Image 1 (cartoon, helix red, strand yellow):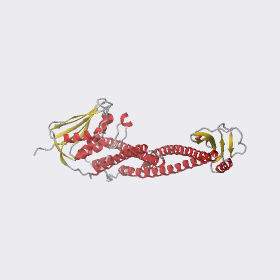
Image 2 (cartoon, helix red, strand yellow; image 1 turned 45 degrees about the horizontal axis):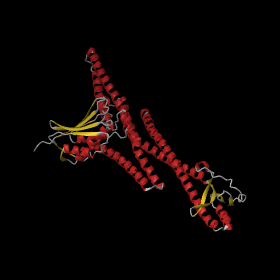
Image 3 (cartoon, rainbow, N blue to C red; image 1 turned 120 degrees about the vertical axis):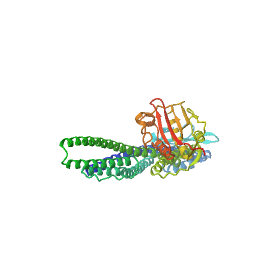
Image 4 (cartoon, rainbow, N blue to C red; image 1 turned 90 degrees about the vertical axis):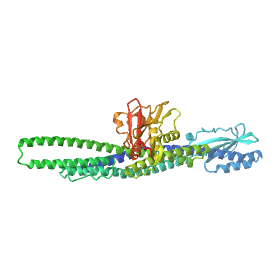
Length: 505
């Protein structure tokens, strides 16, 4: 029980804590960005409101000033000063002499009040600005208005508190989801730990329940096979120990052989434990990839959608933001399709729509529909015999697309990618060769595994879930074909898959 409890609260808590930290950092960044954005909008709206009020007051006072209704002017200035957010109003002539003002001691004097800086951020407590009084395009006077901006700090504080509350709620949801998901990943590992404890206590009938055919499932089957073999060896050892008519020397020799076998099995157990640790690492990386890759387009979609709702944008800006939302949505849809495809392949529920096709024509169509960057090129070299294959055209195009995307990721600027076919016996081999950095020998054996990503700099800078090549392998094998990679470090890579060729007649 101690081992199971340690696994439960160690692995699960660490995984949940890691995801929670990522969520907290991202929510904090979103709060800061949202606060800055709304702060700028609030300042901009305040500036527009000040200019609108000033223009209206200047227009309102112009008629009385032109008609020389001076009594009405003073009354109107006093009346307008009583409006909210206005501290004083003064009317000056062209020589900057105060004619009328809501401040009693100013009329008749030269105006000594200066406009404040145009930056509202630096004058949040109070703001003074002058507006021209125009008559037939001639500046006949100037209106100076003092504004009170004490509402701004309160509005900014309310915005900040709301953002913090919303972000806290989202982080709590992320933590809850991470806790539930990690429980599902942890379940088969707890079962293996329980079985190993029973085996250690001498119960060789215990078996691991294998539910999936992934790496955890393969490890479970290997553990069951190992337990069965150890049980047989142990029974055989007990039988031989109980045999009293065997000479001591023969017993010693036999025990030595059994010890060697047990040592071998122990080494196998250590290898299995290493595979278990690798599986644990892959699951952790998968959760990290899902949380990052799915959250990144979702964050972009939500952010730009909010911007469209909050800001009064022109049509060009709206179209640009909508294009970004569409692109991020397509990217999110593509990742979900990858997860669904790998799930169908593993559960053997994928349905192939087979038809006789010219593999050369399928390759040409795929390359022509692929968005090739301007600074790279694709060379197509096809077998002249035009081999026919029975395939699901869409799925085979998906395989070629995945391999081409991988090749372009590693091909340098002005590099070349060669797509070729050749008939080899009863199969046609399709090859996609790039001029990239090549693949280490340690990575070549695992590039087709789920969620596996090479440790080179190109892979670290690129985005992806690590499912493209795994899906490609599954599709090719469903067509009774094979897929492999040939590569040397620094000399590029060639991804090759073969398909059975239909016999004539």
